[in-house]
Length: 96
Image (cartoon, rainbow, N blue to C red; front, side, top):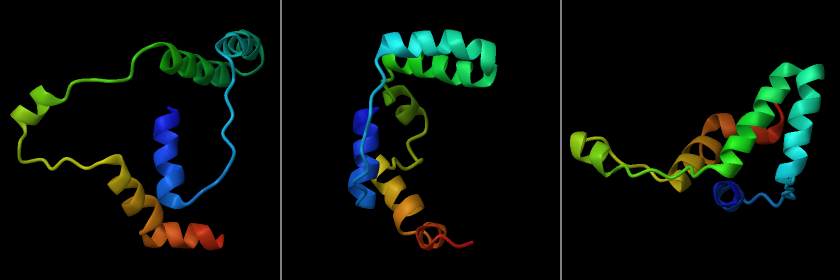
């Protein structure tokens, strides 16, 4: 997830601080939030899954089945949707 975030930071020239919550802290927080906000507890549980299981996959079979679909890198998507798009420019100015 840090590498994913690094792409956004690099492409958008952002320099925000990145923090990490220890896995044990997320587990405790999920239990506590289950009583207070079940929706937030499920979000935290999802984060635990993302932190503890591999998120990689082999796309070679899909690429063979659909060779005409272009491959777009994360860098390209971030530039297109968050840097170069008119919506991104409006958001940067803080207006609608």
